[in-house]
Image (cartoon, rainbow, N blue to C red; front, side, top):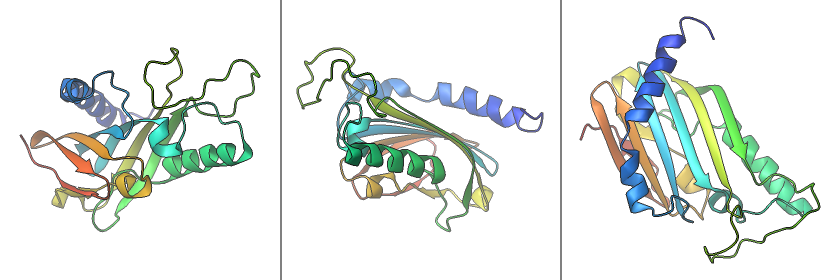
Length: 190
């Protein structure tokens, strides 16, 4: 890691841990709820560091290991999209992706062991839920002059009914819940 990136990473790590994660968890018993996901954003100058976490069902339509060719293609395409697309952007689409890491437990099932289909009954066997986690670092031109941001997540994934967005920036921290189809939010301190 270069020394000029170190302050931004330190800021992002400190900022993201300071976000009111307990609010999201208290509204989401079990923290794994279909239709709901969380996006944490740290803004510093023209850089955004973010963490996005969602049940795999919201993005793939299933949570088990991909078995069919169609499921394998869906996982591959979704992971590629999440790794190549800025998950937060300015109204002018001024953000570019510097780094991205996508983690999913829903990759191809190669173990030929027990398979657990995920119904909507949350009383099933442990380990049958899978999440998709994404971290990104973005550089956004004009970000220092704007408090307006947007995310493509709520329009790209129809199973994502509500996205909890939490942020920290030079003016403080705040949060908003975006419903399916809502993509714009304004950074305000609360």
